[in-house]
Image (cartoon, rainbow over all chains, first blue to last red; front, side, top):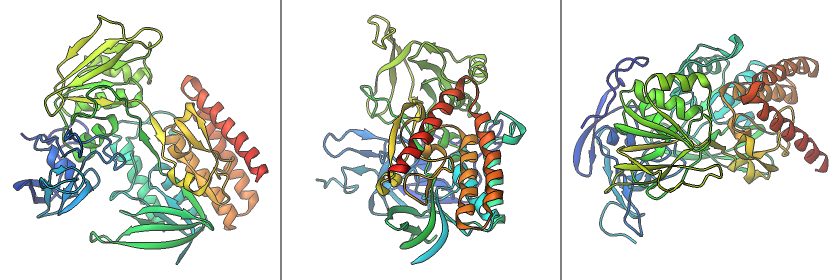
Length: 108
Length: 372
């Protein structure tokens, strides 16, 4: 699925920017320099960023401005990274976060 | 320790306006913003602003943002991005986690003669069964995705709330190619401007008054929303439930000032519902009850971009006066003009209650002052 907006009556063509490759749960995805990690993921139609610690329930974007911390993921091995305010970089490793620590099954 | 005449926290319209006016009058200004891009929320605003020529009617928000940035740079304002102020300590010392541009951060201590808090606001949430599902998000988040990131976070939306944010984001969703099933509004009348409401209705989106979101569901992501009518005491009316097939719910339920830093410093705050909740008291110069600390824009009470700009300008002039780069007689005249423009912005059915609330803040702020 491609959720990028390519035509727009006011903003014109889609976001311009150098292509970068990131790895989302092991799969390569193409992103654009200058966009957030959350945007790169949402552009593929994927909206689950993490599963909560106690109930394992899914969470995605909520506030989009770095305030609510609902969208945190493991980015380059660092858990609890706010993906809505973190810009993608070439070669970045992004993982769905489970609980509060990391991408693996091992959690508190 | 770095020393600065003025440190402005936040580079939205209020913070930039304060910086520009202070810098133009010879004050050395540093702006610190936790985001990687300056401009605050202006860059999401692709619609034209209204009002008078003085307030750039007919110009789109993102162009206003660009003009402000250019003006700030031209006047020698220093801007640190990716840099979060993590504390303000007695003696107007700030601790800043400064982004060095290469992903690394350093801790910097700054001593400021004057501090301006221009941290803006955050959106209110509405909770209902299913509200934590991916696909339920704030209207501002939707706006950031479609207008700044240029991606659609869903295909078919339900908008909760008919204030200006709800109406404008609905229209912008359609411009981005999405479908909006309806706008629900629990009150009996539309919250935002009639101009925006008419646009949305002409585009075929029903605005359902006395109606609210009851619950939402889906496997791991949002798949449906149940709406229902409410009676005059806001209670759901049984039998009026209706299920809409939507994959995204956008919540536009107002904003509240972001005042953590003001609170941490001990600025006196009061609960002012007309301005979004807890608001730091301030005087006519926008100075809080903590000497040398100013608050402007949405963090001084939620209004709109034009009032934020004027409040920022006011603080900028007041700071130049206090630091001594302009004479008090010049400052009086310049502030008088800004106050007049602010009063004009707060006229009419939408502005009047804010004007009264602001007057209350200033009166109360003056009283608190005398106590200290």
